[in-house]
Amino acid sequence: MAELSQTNAPIYEALRKFRRMRIVPFDVPGHKRGRGNMELTEFLGEDCMNVDVNSMKPLDNLCHPVSVIKDAEALAAEAFGAANAFFMVGGTTSAVQSMLMYACKEGDKIIMPRNVHRSAINALILTGAVPVYVNPDVNTRLGIALGMSVAQVEQAIRENPDAKAIMVNNPTYYGICSDLKKITELAHAHGMLVLVDEAHGTHFYFGENFPLTAMAAGADCASVSMHKSGGSLTQSSFLLLGKNVNADYMRQVINLTQTTSASYLLLSSLDISRKRLALGGREIFAQTVEMAEYARSEINGIGGYYAYSKELINGDSIYDFDVSKLSIYTLPIGLAGIEVYDLLRDEYDIQIEFGDIGNVLAYISVGDRKRDIERLISALAEIKRRFGKDGADMLTQEYISPVVSETPRKAFYAAKRSLPLDEAAGEICSEFVMCYPPGIPILAPGELITHEIIEYIKYAKEKGCQMTGTEDINIERLNVLDL
Image (cartoon, rainbow, N blue to C red; front, side, top):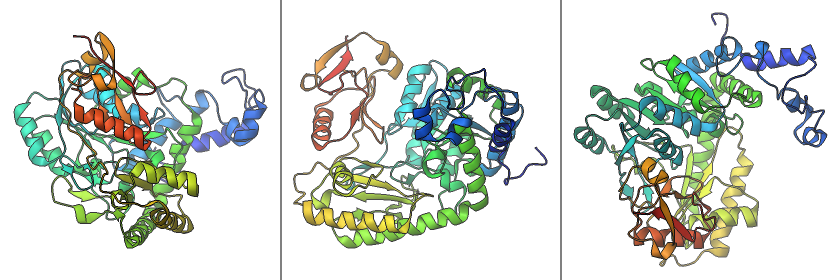
């Protein structure tokens, strides 16, 4: 490792060397460098198919790396300021689940915000850990959940001193950050691990004037979606560890669920993207912020829309804000976020990240261009002119605090019965209901179904939100506990 630097990309370099060797393949994958599936090769390209290979000595093995993958992971750890880093090819979902599986066994408590990604609640089902939810504050104007209040975390620790860990979303999908350093100090003072879902914060590590990173705050683990703002291929992520985490045991935990046939397309994309950000990230993300700030100013100038930023900061539940996030409140023009999302795609050929009841998010990152930003601004102005209307009857509440009646694991595996949506109020849900993206559950297994939640689900369906999680594909029925 001593001879390597951030200018190296060990996996990428090994693949290039391997390609020059012209090895005859009598191993998997069966397409044999693309020759066995010419339509796929024509679609993806020979260069891609030539490096879609299996683990072997010259290329190392992700489950037990001893050479090029080990070197690449060491370079990633150095770039992110972590003690160790793991290449994850199951998305940040697998990184989140590995963090929780490391920290908690069946019956262990974990303090976490309820507005977590479904992957975290899935991990509770897998492990049998017991969530202690800190219901986030809500900005009632925007209808969005905020970060974790330090006072709420303190209270949760006092009431649950036996909890093993605290999990924090930082930043949220909308760009909102908690006081990560103070929460980390609190947790460590009480012998608890700090796990950070940093899926939307890759750029924090490489830019200037961004919110504090999980590793700089002293957190124990962080899951980082390199494919979101870092430029790697979809499904590729990093799991970062602090100095007090047993990296050898963590690899064993990761290997419980991660594939033994890791894609070298994903691995090399992580390697190359890490190199690019380590060498030029400051310039890349300075440009990203400049584009986001320009777009925010222009969109706010249209009238009606509200592209929010650091003015939301309150020193606690909104401790900081990610200015690269272009989150836009749409209700004043009389359109739900999901309606603006659909109009942008269907009328203007613009695909943004997501739309919910009251907001849209346009994700700006390493690959965006100024002319694309101009096109988005123009389209939003035209949508207001062509489709805008009075917003008096719009539903404004986005996040509904749940009533937890049973642990996710027990509820998920319990005997259940199916009820029509309108008849489910008062019952305990045994499945997920969520809009995806962002993948934050409206209902999770073990939570009470209320009239308010049913009306929200019906409204979200009516507006065109992509609903997922239920056994019934049309979300006309819900599975409830058969008590």
